Amino acid sequence: MKKKPIYVEIPIQSDMDSLWHVTQSPEEHEKWDLRFSSITYLSKKENEPQLFTYKTNIGFGLSIEGWGKSVGTHDALNGSKTSSLQFGTNQKMSLIKEGRGYWKYNPQSDGTIQFLTRYDYKTNWGKIGELVDLIFRPLMGWATALSFDVVRRWLEKGDPPQSQYMRFYSTWFIALLFFVVWTYHGLVPKLLFMHPTEISMTTGALPMTEPQAVWLNYVVGTGEVLFGLAWLVYRKKEHLFKLQLIVFPLLALSAVIADPVNLTHPFNPLTFNLALVTLSAVGLMVCREIPTARYCRRTPK
Image: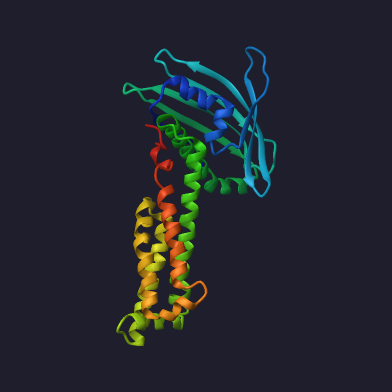
């Protein structure tokens, strides 16, 4: 099965010189492109291709180091520019063996520049590498698109890449934490084990019999699991943070009403929900104006 090359396209409100500088200068390029941790140009002679080395940190102290070669640029009569390159690595642990592609800068009548890339690569590891690439290739496309939106926001709004990525990773770290919190509290003490404290808190806060409280806790537990999953799939995290700023104080209040003795327990509902309210407020502040891969076109016209 032939795999499609990766294609990403985005309109950027910028002049050509600025966009060319932040994408062609290695010091600027490594600031916004998720695919590279560092890029170093090598010395070259006149009329020879520009050679460079790159490094990509993959975690746990490991990194992929490779080579690249700018095989030429082209200026068209309509003002567009094209930059072509080849890249690869000799490291066997790298899935990518060798590839090639291009960047294109197309000025538009509305003053924007249509910035796009198309590239493809060969893989290592034989058939296993081809299977792994079924997951890796979409991730590479997503990383490219996210990076393109970062450079767009940098040029259009003056928002530095480092600040954008800090907000992006902070938002998703908090989102994953709330996914764990809601899913755990829905599954473990309610759906799987139905802890006696859950039942007593329900009967203490509401005029219910024990069987009715058990049924209600099953419903609430299911809702908590679904809300936890929403943190993974719902795009507008701002709405979820705002909802929690209302829900957590109500949960703390209901627990105290059900049994005031709860206030004397370590990690009691009041202090626990206060921490979650604070974290929700922080999440609400950092989740706005984060870069997104959805802004890019992923297939050519």
